Image (cartoon, rainbow, N blue to C red):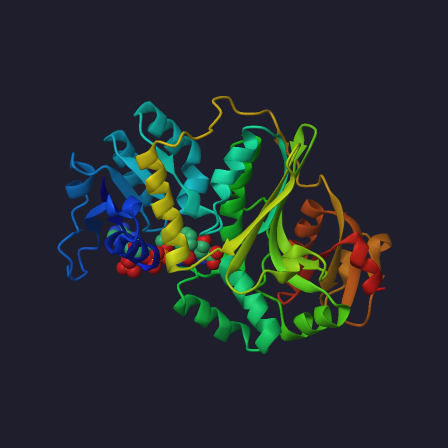
Length: 395
Ligand SMILES: NC(=O)C1=CN([C@@H]2O[C@H](COP(=O)(O)OP(=O)(O)OC[C@H]3O[C@@H](n4cnc5c(N)ncnc54)[C@H](OP(=O)(O)O)[C@@H]3O)[C@@H](O)[C@H]2O)C=CC1
Ligand SMILES: N[C@@H](CC=O)C(=O)O
């Protein structure tokens, strides 16, 4: 099986190393025949080329691994590879979240596979197990820590008290962060991953958009972490989606967990992805969600599934489920120097102390809209979702 790797950064070099090392009989049957790099890059390996047609028009290439990132030319190269009868494996959640239906259809039309395990939760076999669950169950919720960089930052802030910027730099050096790390910090990387996950789970076609509730950890401070610590709670940047009858919601937001909840113990660059199915109930997966080898491992697993011709579960018809971002009512702790009652009904606000307020029974969509308005007045404001069971800790 001849593999062409497009993009030779963190993940691309990891895929190359795993295949070159050939630790098992499975990986020994794989060959990296081409590595696509920029024109400006020194071609220090014989497989390297800066001419994409050497790969896309080459009948000897069986699988194209797209790990360049970004939207174009990744979208164009993936489509052309599929149209030219090549299987494609991609870790690029940004392009997949935007063009998943087009890629899946093009793959089906050309009788090849399009696999993307590594695009969500890095090394965790999440997509595969989500698809397995769907063979038996309706999935009624998806929830998880889907970003390794933000989890690493929150964990290190708590453990070391180091400044946010220094920890982010470390995450970048470790190969966890996106080329533009604001995607990690502001939640947009999770948005891509959550869209991919629930579009599979609910058989919908929602694409990431500015209208969807997404609030990251850009404004979190040491003071916030210390306060949550005093409450006995741990903050995680979560992606959550719940389905009820013919509707589903989705939200990305910092969320507090108490020590009895599994999310609270997910540390470092680890992710935790969970679903709820009719008969399986709660099912969760934990592992490294970012980094060279965990991600490359998931890419190579996809290649081996192509070799083994493992069938995928992609339903033909889309469901009629509708997105309703105000489906669930929950509670929030808000830190702002602005007058919160200008943005949220005062009957829902309870002062906790002179820094934080509790906003009760708010639909997520409305709360995120209120915060977007409030941030125009106080650009350092922060909010965190708090479970009903933990509310007594703050009052
Ligand atoms: N790192 C991780 O932990 C994970 C990453 N991913 C995804 O995998 C993909 C790759 O990530 P990662 O390896 O970390 O990123 P890197 O930035 O480390 O690597 C990307 C490589 O592709 C090259 N590249 C980008 N555009 C082009 C182009 N047009 N032509 C030729 N080469 C190009 C880059 O070159 P240059 O540096 O010159 O721009 C770089 O060498 C991304 O989509 C990312 O979201 C998914 C899961 C985990
Ligand atoms: N930047 C991403 C990489 C993996 O998807 C993350 O930190 O999770």
